[in-house]
Length: 142
Image (cartoon, one colour):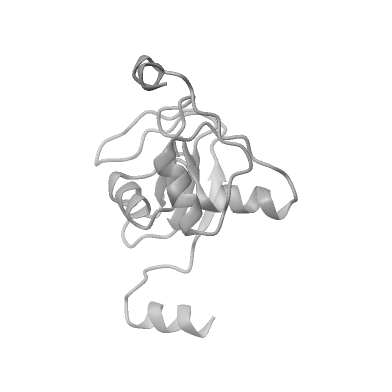
């Protein structure tokens, strides 16, 4: 609480608000750069009483399954992202999700390439079974 109070006093933060809401109606974008929202969007509200705008809130749309390009690049650099999922455009297999499942005593079945297996080894995660699909190139070598 004291850290928030200090931020309010030094104007680092304009409000103590920080909560999430799920929108239950659709509202088109209005004048002055207001946000268009659709039913079931999740918003992060950061200020319910901005100065000079009593009828507006400061909020941003939350996309829980989508990483920004910079965050994606940072996670790849830190080896947190193993590989992009084929099912979704912006889905990824992450070390955190694999670790979370392993702590439950469950085995993961992941369609990963050899480079991802090397990343897993760096974090002391050792796959039990590795399935390598046959390609025309690998068939010629056999």
